[in-house]
Length: 507
Image 1 (cartoon, one colour):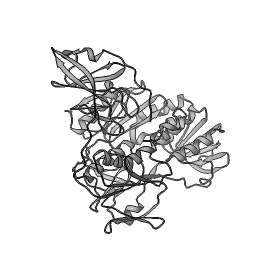
Image 2: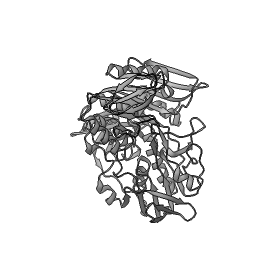
Image 3: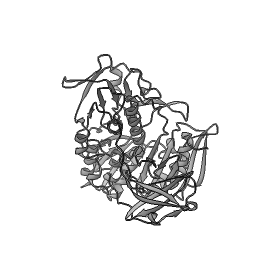
Image 4: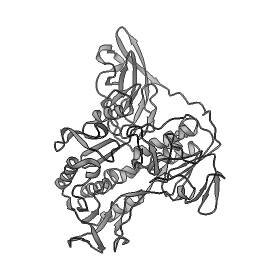
């Protein structure tokens, strides 16, 4: 996604900044000429990198220094202070680096440093095949090339569109505030330049772990030395009369998003079935298009199972303040042209319907290949499945989580991208245990909710701040241990909680 570039502010760093102006672990945002630059300190070392996150353009100066990295305050992308490399998704492109000099108690930022090219990878499987063109698949292909892998990379995507920014399908793209050119994760030239063989509309019929080959629906086969299975998830469909009508939508793909936008162009009223994150983001996006929205859900509070009662009440309130009408404790029993009938007898007028009742992992290929399953594809700490050389990532993978000590599966965009990056490194023999803390963000009108960790259950919710005042950090605990935290406008605190969970900083 593109973003407005940051404007230069703060001191002229080329003129020098006193040592004492930057505490250890701190940053100062300034500029070199017209370029916004962040100057960071770690003990007696100083680093200067571009101030704008290459994901959505947030100011890295508002983020957090952890070791020799800086984390973005918005979506937790991680950059090397030494090289500017985007070490952790959702950012993939580096930020520029500047030369730093120390003299007479001052730090001076000089000219830009050219990024050093990485050497070719030592481990060399000749052929890597990636099944799935979503977050994990793209991230793995990109990281293989970034790490210097020179063998063949084939990216098989069932989608008809090259990898794109899926979270925006329920956020800015659907709301009409993001142009279509923001959606691709990379330009078409990227795949050509990086020699990534991207095959769109590729329907994979089978994987043979012993023969080391993938068979496509048309009968063609592809051999592999290492394989990533990243088939993602699919929307759960309504099982009621009328659910197959053309004005009933789900939202998973860009095509789904475009279909909803087309329906919204002539609509006045919509019914969203399900108060999931997707369902409520759809509701917010449709309200931005001035469409009357009714949300139907069986629970008494939206998102209570994930966020708890206090944040659930808050989410309901901000949607109601923006005109959404809730029908909670209700389910839809039938859909007809122009109306939705609820179990309690209420009939809602609807020009179109969006079902947001959850997703399920696509496990068919893994099951037919004989991989070990347990409510997902079981992987070890290196994200390798029960079949050597075959890895799984993203929505289908169930991995050992070091924070909870449990095996977990998470349907988060950032997690899938981080999975893909770790798999690429492990395919190249780097032996990287996956220890990243899960993270996701959800946007409701002008209110972002950031969530780090993974808490399927808790026995205590500790609230710091004012939930209804849109200023809070909510910790979810079990037996006194923090498993997850949700925050509203507490970006740095969210980053600190993440760092504590990673063990990168003291709790």
